[in-house]
Image (cartoon, rainbow, N blue to C red; front, side):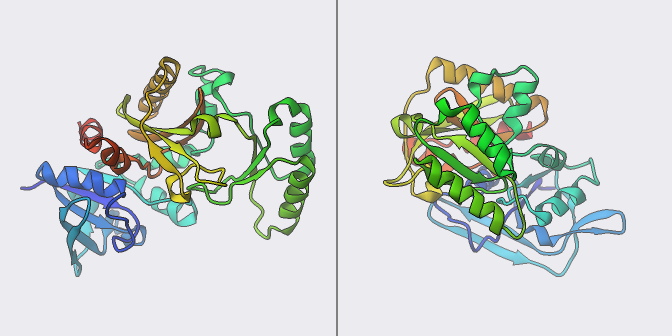
Length: 324
């Protein structure tokens, strides 16, 4: 009987075939002889003590330019029929995402990558703080951060660490993703005015992350490092677009190859082993200089970008490390 892989992601009709990392992993699975099925989070149901899938899409062929697939519906497909299930739904990590993880956490037979328990336990913007708390990395490996909805707490942080804000102020939403709604201010007065207005006008108040703007972003860019199974898989540098602060490729950033320093390699290897110990099989590290900005564990991207830059598939090694 042919082994099967289930990918839970966003609509197959909306994915960018040339850049989507979920498709890169699915392509490896197909080439390894797996039958690959794709579904969305709303297709997952708990049904009479079983987790079932209402509608699936059978992936037939995948390349960087084209994907062929066939919808398959009419039956309830059992999650237990899949040896491997990849959660590849993009953020935000909202109630729908949490519901998906809670449902999937009701079983322990299928290997789910990344495990829903880990996605529920660790926030992508805070996982590096846990590594610091456990002594895996040091304070110099963190971006100084204030997370709050209180303007006075934010002001206190900025004044107490005023020397850090020489190059400007960054505000980003706690539940943001993909570089969206990242705001930069050079002027302190304009920054506080913006924060005050935002906190007053938000109907569903969410915490803001306040950080100093690190000059390394313009001088070196930020580095995406993909790790899997406790190993560094690949890396590349993202440079912000003209007039932009966020270097995410979705925000107009440009990817280039630059060799990691010895310190960066040692830092990323420590984080890779830390994540493996937490049963986090795949992650995308955002590295600024020798600091960890975020650790993306919901739907890490970068496989296709690295393949475009080098001509080599890094998804194959990652897939094999995760499924062995």
